[in-house]
Image (tube, rainbow, N blue to C red; front, top):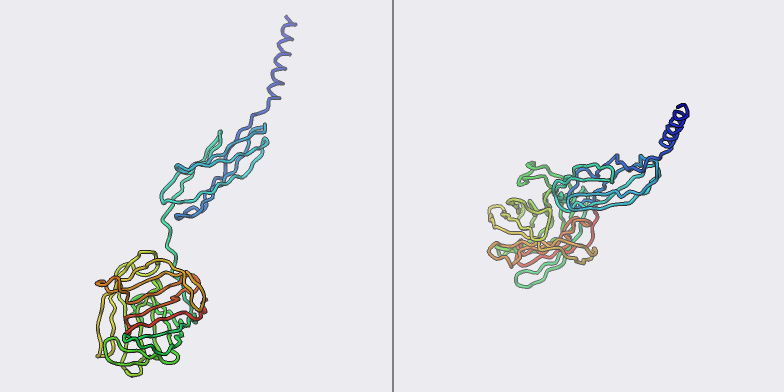
Amino acid sequence: MKRVFGVMIVLLLAVSFLAACEVAPAEFTLSGVTVSPSAPVVNDTVTISATVTNVGEESGDCNVSLTIGDYTDSKSVTLAGGASTPVSFSYTAAVEGSYTVTVSTPDDSETRTLTVTEEAPPGAPVWYVDDNWVYTCSYVDAEGTSYEDVELNVTMVAEVPAGTEEGITEDSYKLSAVFVPEATRVAADLPLTLHVGTAGVWNSKAHMEYLKQSSAIAELPGIPSSVTWTYVGDYGWPFTEGKTWSSAVRTVAGTIIDETVDRESKVLGVETITVPAGTFECYHIVSYDPASPDTYTSESWFNATVVKSNVREIDRSTWSGAETRVLKSYSVS
């Protein structure tokens, strides 16, 4: 009996020893799962990061998987027992919506929520005091007579809050424009040859479109001459191909002229054009009488990133004939 009891004790000790010597298999857990940026817009690149830890004692291989809707990706890691490693994935948020982000191993999983919103439109270009644009202006009247080219020097002189000046209904930039020498122009509706020396220009800060222009005309001393634009709905910036908007354009010259015409404007597309100041990618924007959409009363080529203004303009409505302005040089902040 004693012998049997002694054998049982030996067997129990052997089992305990083997249990103590058993190595825990590899087991992979997740921690620190993050999604950045936390509030992406369409086309943002999102980074999903996590830490993988082998909480077992044996070394092992593991596939770490990412699932976002129908999108999947995976990465393989090899870890010794007790070791950790960071893992990250990149994902392009192509469509707005709310998505469940799942990071998983064969032994663990973590979920997060990803909300993608519509891409925010780019902010309008910003002008600063003393920003300057110099144009060469050519002019041909309705009879085909060409006039001397002049230089137009345009400088941003102030920011004007809405309502602080007549005709300025929203926050604007005020610009000073000087013709050197005076520009000779033929009136559109009267048999008059006029000479223009200076002009004031007000542009909408948010929409980058004209709000008002006033001119000093030698033949009309003391008589205020101005053009104002009143827009309907979403107009101007941001410019996208095919975008259209409407405006009422009022021209006043003392008691001689006071008329308002309707205009439609449209972004035809993006074009690369070369002028003396350089080569630029521009939005080609046209305006026209709604009754004659194929006859442009004005055209402009606007560069948003470098010049931050028009690179070329053709005006067929202010005067009889057409005035063309081509950018010669610029200095912007």
